[in-house]
Image: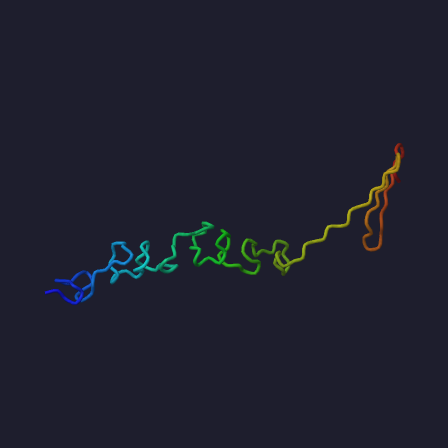
Length: 140
């Protein structure tokens, strides 16, 4: 005589439990921790419905756990953020990413008048340098 689930004998899932396989992955729902995910029967690191195999940056950490999925060096932003190393190459106490970049000095002014050239360097600490050269004469 059939039981409540229509079975005549106990199935894989036991008596009164239908051997249903919702996601058609070959594992009955009663044994499948991801009954709606045909690619997984166990949640793994990323959970049902999310692949553990996706590693966009090939760093070995699944994207679902990687806060920097496109940075192969980092899996968390750290102090400098994804894509920027947390390093202090100059040995001071400040990470390089937190330091202000050195400003480039202003460009020198160059004046050409017939056979002479005058180069004026921008003032540094109140001192300004000028170099003049006339063709045929060595500057002093």
